[in-house]
Amino acid sequence: MDEILEDISRSVWNFITLAISIALYFYLKHSANNFVSLHGSGVRARNLINQEYMADTGRIIVLMILTIILFALTIFIAFKNPSFTALFQILLSLWFIYLTFRISALPFLGTALLTVVIGGTLVYLITHTD
Image 1 (spheres, rainbow, N blue to C red):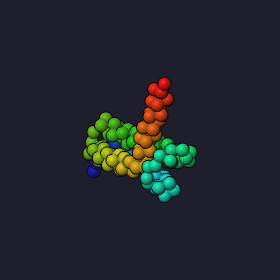
Image 2 (image 1 turned 90 degrees about the horizontal axis):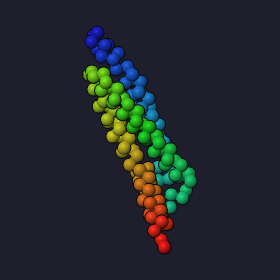
Image 3 (image 1 turned 90 degrees about the vertical axis):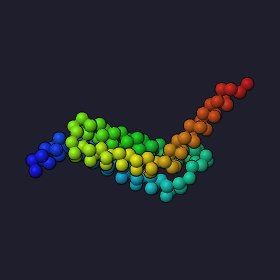
Image 4 (image 1 turned 120 degrees about the vertical axis):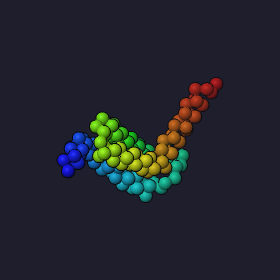
């Protein structure tokens, strides 16, 4: 029993970052669901001129990046203090990173990619026209 408590006490900082990360993931999931119910799940070029759509997309992408950074921090701390509990936290963090990418695939990352492609095309056309 003392070994289990010692193992958990070595991983206490991981539990803090893991709890914050999981809470942030569920907030991200809630925000993404609200976004999809409001704007739909499709990526459309005409949505790029809608200020509310772009602001919500940007907010969700920032939440996604912050969530992934906190899960990566949990993994980093777990590697510093290897134990059975840390291994469990690493696996759980990797699973939530996968789920975060699944939530953010469409329409958020698709919108970001479409913005980059259209913006790059416009810049190219402006700089290379005679």
